[in-house]
Length: 394
Image (tube, rainbow, N blue to C red; front, side):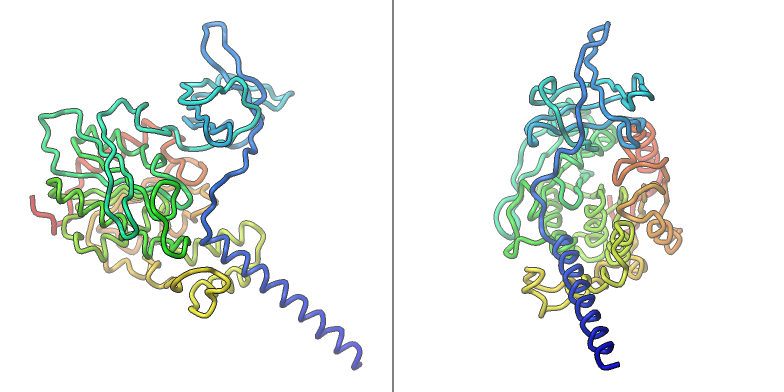
């Protein structure tokens, strides 16, 4: 009996240590910036069709056969190509051929592997809209941004759209919302955030899931106000949507925020991260242990955070009553990173403010990619017809 008890105790200790290691790994994965993505997409063939159109042949998968517009990054991120419609497929060879709309950089013909992405625009140039590079003063230096002026010079440009990218991304990811803003006569500012590949890092070099990053966007709003902005529309993608909610609730400029357009928003970080862990095969309780580490000042040796994360402050299901600005939530039920159910619940808590726009199954933040024209038309219609926040005086 004693030997059995010792064996059980040893087994429990090993299991407990394994769970602690798993929770530690999970916690670090949440906040440690990722600088590189693995090029895991095989590029079978690049060729010219009979009409000289450039084509790319890829292994068929749910991603590569999805309708819409996407991109391939290749050559360790130095090459970028915009990928358009599916032209043909070969069930026997399990391949799909798509049209290449343009190659922005690099030699796609010599590429053997790449990364499938929703970043259709790597830089502003393919948009064909007038812009300039500007620098926004932030806590640890200057954050680069792209400033787009409306193409119709006769329009009142005092409404500014601030475009905010997602976790682990770059400001290029938020360019998809700029054409709609331009058609409405808005001035656009596409911003960078601390610890992304463009902006100065935080003192601890860690993501804070919007708790500190929103101050960088508030600095961008301050810049816009200094340039004559009288009302602000926030376009937020994933983490960027979480940041937009923080601004709408807490910024000194919140009375200037007229509307929020939130694409695949992270409304509740705790619920989102637990759902991510569960879909990856990690037990929920291990994920919750990792979140507890992120919320403890004494766990800095594990997380590297200067300050613990306050997941209550990151929960806008609980904070929904603090909001007073019209919100368009854009999401799809197939999103495996940010649960659609959380977006639906958020909208149900503030139906007088929030509208839910659903799209067919797509990858995270790729609602626009799955139907660019439909996304543009729906967002433009909503912005034209929904009155701004009553706090904004024009």
